[in-house]
Image (cartoon, rainbow, N blue to C red; front, side):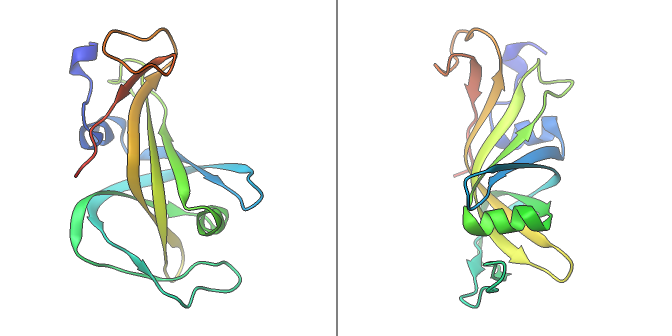
Length: 155
């Protein structure tokens, strides 16, 4: 794929990279944790966390609100849920895909948690998304020192 055919929006990049990603979260002690996850894309729903959060996990239950833009929903394990309760800033990383010209997809986001009967769902609100690959910057890419292309986020 030539660089001109690369996705320019987060929505189109998610279609290219698929569901399998890695969630990077941070513990209360500032230690990183990496977990393989399956990502689903749905219409963003504003989530309010109950004031009655569980004292052991710090995680409350969520209730939906009005639809908005794009959201990434991640089914998570217990450690990722505890980390999200301690630090709501996460990163999702997709390794290069066959049609990505060697680029990885990196999405920084803020998370709210939804405790369900048998698992916890993390609702990630993307705040920044880039296509990234090692190497010298190409023309019209960012100045991160590598070959980075910023993606448009939903309004």
